[in-house]
Length: 178
Image (cartoon, one colour):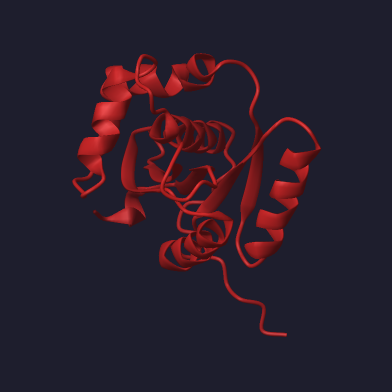
């Protein structure tokens, strides 16, 4: 996929921290063109302990590159604030944005679902794609919603940035030489 067509790329995360059980940690990479066509480029879907999640975050950020915005959810309460601070420190060399989780999951996924059903979202083929499609198709009745949460957050962040003009076409950040 030619990523130069995208005005913005966002890797959005939905966290879990139970190794080999419970919910999954999901990280969806979404690109969006100036005309608001989105493409899901990649997704991570794992059951790691907190140390494994940290390692995955750093490895994924390195793979994605510094031009990709990283979106982290802020869960309610002090624990959510502490987790966000931890992730911001862990990814201090990258652009990290935070997004409060409020309202129902269905409400937060509404724009993403509408865009999918309108044909405004495509997906590249990857080993993760079938699992993601199954979860999206079965939501909200599925027992899993990790791809939905990370996909919706990524789509919403992309849409907001393109709609508000928060992107500069062709911009590539440079490292400070000092």
